[in-house]
View 1 (cartoon, helix red, strand yellow):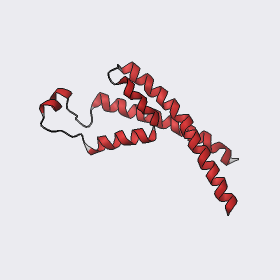
View 2 (cartoon, one colour):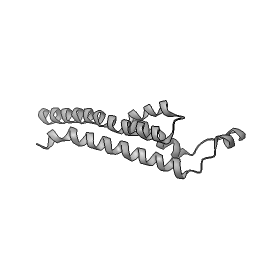
View 3 (cartoon, one colour):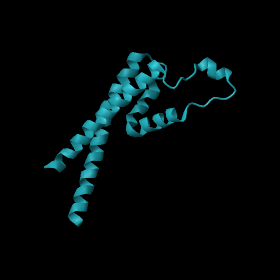
Length: 115
């Protein structure tokens, strides 16, 4: 009985992870906790690299929510369009995690049956 709920639990977690990442990036965009300079300031600098944690967050976002790649289509769009695409990405994350849940359940039953 517990095994049959696993894919749905994974799907729910996928959607929650998508919305958590959306809120994290909205916070970063609004409050700038990394104190990132503006584009003009970066162009005036001889060399600039963003903080390592910022790059780690970007990488982990695309690993945990692959549908966030849709945000590449809204680079210069407004806040409403970015939020709309984040919501779509979060809901697309659900079926992806559901498929992972199915694979985990299948592997779990194979390992249990093989013992």
